[in-house]
Length: 138
Image (cartoon, rainbow, N blue to C red; front, side):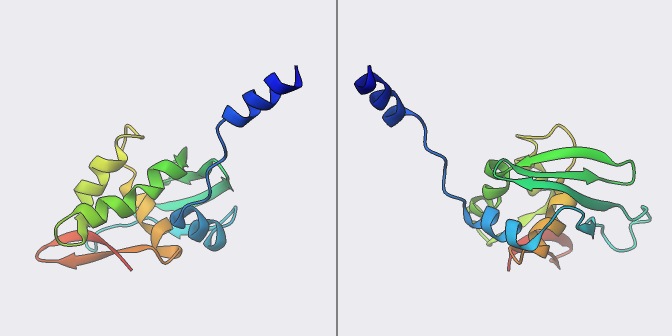
């Protein structure tokens, strides 16, 4: 019986080591952190915010927008931003391309809320180049 239990435990999935995004966000953010959402200057839209509700080994839960809407970002979704930027030929990702990537996890626009989280942690920032907004690693 003990051998069966030992074999089962050996085959059980191991918790993954935290990735670079998880490590940086966990050190830069805490519950209650409030950041302005990304907004194109002079867009005429009201300024929204992102408020960190909880941060754990599962990901980051934030209240987004002025409504506010609770939304959970898994570490898998956030860790994938770095490879997405690296895969782009200019080492930058257009905001709409980040939105397309994040839509794998969320059915509504979340890029404007993810950008300030990544910026606060020193991972990525929004920049204006060649008449468009991009996300670039810091």
